[in-house]
Image (cartoon, rainbow, N blue to C red; front, side, top):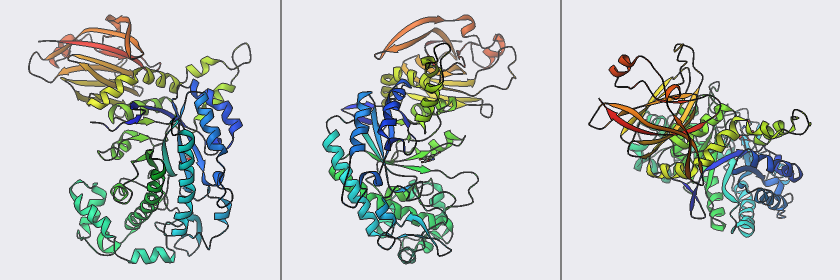
Length: 536
Ligand code: DGJ
């Protein structure tokens, strides 16, 4: 039912974090960071490895950083995802070696409308593509040699947030010629075959231009910046397909891309990198880069739930490589993993978070107070997700898991799961139900008939039967507790004030409710097991 990341034969849930862009070029610094990341309850760290760091002179490779990073991770019982900062990092070619930067003749750049070139390597250059491919293949070959048995490195991110900035497309001579030519038959064939499944943005544009199955880019998709973006998506996808396929021939690790998603203030492609995998172009990427296993969104926007919904589809499992590390970030992690069978979650700049907290002096001694780390939202959230990982992975595989992320703007949500609808609501102040609620989140896994595990924070939960029989779901027994080695260890038997939502039993009965439900406090996520019974 779900596509999961399999590591050494077992599914793996990434409780991740990404270090700042250049942190991983400094092994001495990383030495101080690894233990902190382990303390934050991460199991996987996303670290950059740049083309310029491994091929400082053409044909001369130095993998000291790769080896040092693998060592540091292993010593701290962490796994790694390497981010290949090759031709592009946030659109720009800032991590290519100096010998590439210095030879614009040999390594052509994107040219924009003004006629100026920018510091972005052109996708329409075989020299660019093959130079990056040579370095990437050498890196993958080395990685297999030093890590093929240990599998410290789980996956590779290809490039970082690719696309043209400053214009909607490349306008150098090669790009103009390709743009004036026919849409490649491979792409037309894929789109025609997938016509019924295509995302509406793309399908709508194609249909509005007449639904032609051959012609130039503007014949098929109409003139305008969106067509430029579609054209760029194809060219980035082809370039990265070549690299990815060559890398996989050396060492077949899963490979993904990350996207700088369209921001509300963007006026069009070029304000955000034009050609990256966006909802408009995801189908183009699927056609152009079949070796890339999935395209992932970087999400710092508040409508997180919308964006993950747009990126998760049957041919695109969900992973969030960049997002937030605060309490809202924990809500994001729960939602990704619970509602979209996510492979994992990873806030950006994770080394900064841990460093800041670790450097804060403790009350008496002046030494770091370990509680500072334990009380941060992310380590708390990850600690619970870690405990629950076997249950979560099993429920993902069986399609028996769901999640919600609620706020003052969206205060309730009903999720069908198993024989019940699970009714989620932001946690109400019982004395003042009209009080503006805080955001709340939860994931729920069906554990058996009439039995659920719910984990969450600042939320309340009731159930409604969805099979024939008595209409009301009552709470037979509720336990708070924890998981140890996958086994449920109950501690408190919850009842009374713990579960009371509403003393108006007549009103509740009229709504087929008992007036009782699960309540989760605001101080970080906790987990409860509930057994239900039914009455009328
Ligand atoms: C998105 C990029 O992918 C990251 O490398 C980093 O630069 C962040 N933006 C900064 O917020």
